[in-house]
Length: 338
Ligand SMILES: C[S@@+](CC[C@H](N)C(=O)[O-])C[C@H]1O[C@@H](n2cnc3c(N)ncnc32)[C@H](O)[C@@H]1O
Image (tube, rainbow, N blue to C red; front, side):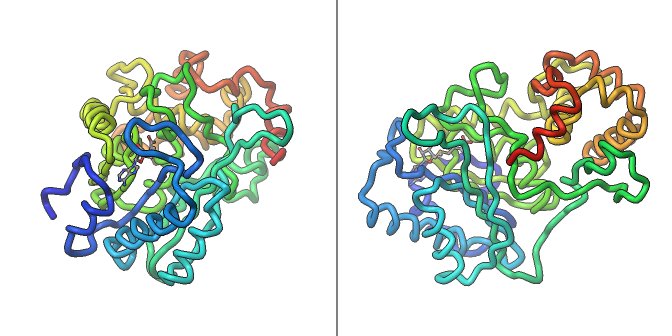
């Protein structure tokens, strides 16, 4: 088992996993090919439906077998097979569905004769409905009561995010985390899943490595990872990407006071909370909440002060997500649109 630790392996995940004798994974995240004719270098994403489903049963079977009794599994999937996967996990493996998450992203593909698709399903299951890891405090966001009304009755810890996630845009050309891989998941989305459903030191398995996002984020968040891709080219690129994540760099300008991982956290938190910089920096109560959340995530011995955070937000300016360009009122309204 030791040889699997912190590895990006090349091979067919079913074969690789079949050779592993016993459960090790605390968390599984799987983002398989969706069988929609996507272009990968090695895998052909246009199988007959029965063939695709038979294969889906195989890899799910291996992942469930290797998931520890307290473990959680998240599967990202398109419309075509979301319902099948739900039934396979519930009826054939007796797992419990905790959330059917919709990842809604902007910049979906344009269509002429039907509505443009702009979402992916993320099905979240646990093996044991009474025994699983769920760190709500690690993913709470500032609530509307706190954000808009400064309401003293609001839970000071913030609110749990909804099950429609619209704060993570698809990776596009201008993102510095972009690797060139065609369907790379955003690191921030993986960070939410890994934070909430695992502890530091836990073991995360991703059977479909692609660009290596899961491995990179697991590594940055001090988890152990194992990931597999059938393409040696993708696996090799992911190894390099994961190695470069050593010391936790993401995008941004590192500085002794603001190392890159702190900048990355600041940006993730900023985009999750959807409060324009001007509004956030002008409202002390909000800024104080934001600073607390940031310090909580970073677990620094010397926490940032409100002033540190305000100055950093202002200096990052255009490097923050495009929320800044939206006035606070319109932006708050937009968070209810879905
Ligand atoms: C949707 S992509 C994963 C993207 C990844 N989540 C990311 O953020 O980059 C699916 C990947 O599964 C790989 N793949 C397909 N069949 C496989 C198999 N049998 N075993 C392992 N990997 C496989 C493909 O080569 C592709 O890289």
